[in-house]
Image (cartoon, rainbow, N blue to C red; front, side, top):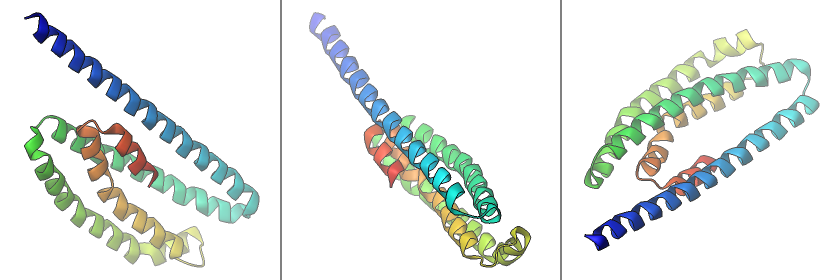
Length: 165
């Protein structure tokens, strides 16, 4: 009985250390990403005209709204992976990817079709930034799936590196 309790204690200590190390990595990568984003905003504010910077801030704020969508999908995948046995992780991955792929394609198509009207509204001479935003929207439906799977199986360090990519 003594060896069983020490084995359980040793396993829980290892899991805690692994989770702590992954959380520290994730925190560091998030801080790095936020720092790079801050520098980017500062440089763009200095380099662009006020009207161009206004368009950039508008498109960036739309991407922030999409980040909420990404985090929601990611949380759903994390919960689905963590609540199931290890044999069904691959099933959760493919089901989530098949569910998100059509939504991403529809969102990209809608943005692509509406890019002309939106460019006129934003007073942009070119609709290319909106197409790029559409590609980001498409990826915002797909990227949270593998990241959520990695976090659901407690591979937080790997998920933090996926965040950078």
